[in-house]
Amino acid sequence: MRATVLLRNAYNRSNTAAFIGLGAMGRGMAANLLDKSFAGSQGAWGAEAARKGERGAFVVYDAFPSALNQFLSSHTNAFAGRDVLPASSPAGATRLASTIVTMLPSSKEVEEVYLGENGIREALEGMSDEKRRETLLIDCTTGDREEAIRVAKEMESLGVKMVDAPVSGGVVGAEKGTLSFMVGGSEEAFAQAQPFLQKMGARYIHCGASGNGLAVKICNNLLLGISMIGTAEAMLLGKSLGLSSELLATVINTSTGRCWSSETNNPAPKATPTIPTPADRGYTGGFLSKLMSKDLNLALTSASRSGVPLPLGQLSGTLYQKLSAHEEFAGRDFSVVYRYLEEAMEGGFGEKSGKKGE
Ligand code: NAD
Image 1 (tube, rainbow, N blue to C red):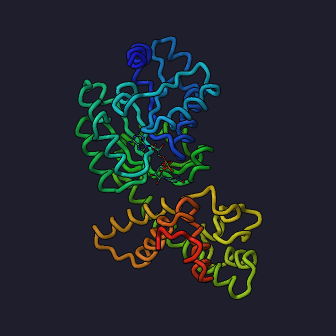
Image 2: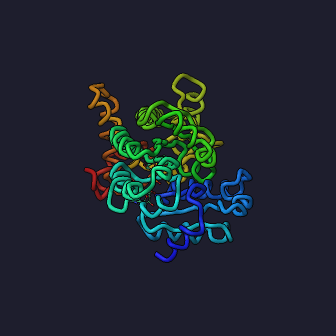
């Protein structure tokens, strides 16, 4: 409480940004935003701003204190003397910061953070029109498109700007600041978001109106989920026919079967010796099966709303759902579908798994 009073007096909201959701993706994105904002000469947090009394801060919030504390402790040294401050709720963060980036697990948490008790809307409702007008909300969560449109409409009805800006590039991209953002929202909101997206990613594409960033992301991940299963099937069949994984991957990757799943994230271990993959390290350090299952569900929900048949999407969704309910596979890279099929082929699947998903 005391900290909040101090902050309100000490910092200029217009030059303050907040980051909510410091998980696997958010912690790297927040670190880049913080680092590049402080290091930049444009002035949001520079010496000139401080001299003019326009000094901004960087505000962070996570529902889990351990995530918040981990971020604060790991950035205390790196950003010594800089103004990194914890908020006690999304509403608290909104009172302090005019730009808020959220990176949450799913639409359920987006609803809580934006529309729930002590949420962003609650803080905005108590604010002047001028403060609302300067507010920009950037939601990077991969969530349901319709839900995102509904939240954005609620926010826009209060006079604030909002974009959906889901990402591709994974945890490594978040840490390195090389993410790609797919952005939905008005031209004006997109323009205002660009300087922030630039600090967290290498590419940002305006995909059209609110919800369109998510539409693009969901279609991409539908294709990715299907192509990974296709690659796993081809690699497994090749192995059973006596081919080495390396030979088969080399030929596929110079032929018509080539795709990201065969080339960069091949599901068969040691298939691409010059490109290390999650499969080479026990399917760790990639995009989790349970997240792919969530994204396939988002695609299937969108498709059923618009009456589009997704026969392969449906089959793939069922397979990722099995992986995500399985204790051995849920927390591994989604290319572990190769291992899942291999175990099914070997018939050893039933004994080993402990079987949450069967
Ligand atoms: P995560 O679970 O690691 O992080 C989410 C964070 O949000 C956690 O720290 C959690 O404590 C926090 N949180 C949950 N509920 C909250 C609330 N009500 N208020 C404040 N904070 C709350 O998830 P992640 O891997 O960082 O993924 C985030 C989003 O990015 C997801 O939508 C995911 O689909 C998407 N995504 C993830 C990857 C990836 O490789 N992990 C890649 C692309 C997109």
